[in-house]
Length: 254
Image (cartoon, rainbow, N blue to C red):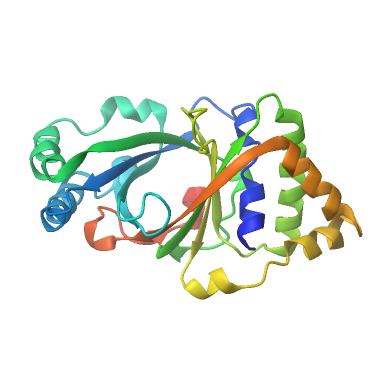
């Protein structure tokens, strides 16, 4: 499943009713280290994560962003966990002091924190795997296009379930999206070789195989009318800086 397929999976999840009051979210904090203090930053964030975020709901991982406008920055990710767990997040035993002294002290005064709702019904984690590379596609969708987007998602999901059942990916929606950017939804594909990026895109052929000849052409028009644009980034998992290890058990994402 190539970039176009990944993009389409993102489109309309935000408009769906919540399955329960305790759905799961990811907290993402983008961090920019001072260019002359990268070593100090990495040492500080690694020690902090291994002391305060090495297990359970508050476990965290670090990713280095290798492409796009944020290349060179780091993404600190905690979760998935329910919103209610935020009330009990680490704040004692020197946690905040350690973060400020040994992490933030080596960063620039710029950053961004976002919260992403995880949608297991539109994601696919068919087996356990180890993190390595992440392809992150984010989409900006138009206002008042929810019914059209739901239909698009249903069609794409059907194709992927039939044609790409073994690929691991997660679908997320921004809990506090900003109309000035394109981060309303995100599709994260997990892969272990850059060779995946060079594979031919066969989605149009697969779509016509599922829905009939000529269906994909109409589908493109529906996508165009429902979206404003998209952006993409490649992330590299940094186990040496993370509290949690590389392994992702599939049962935890169902």
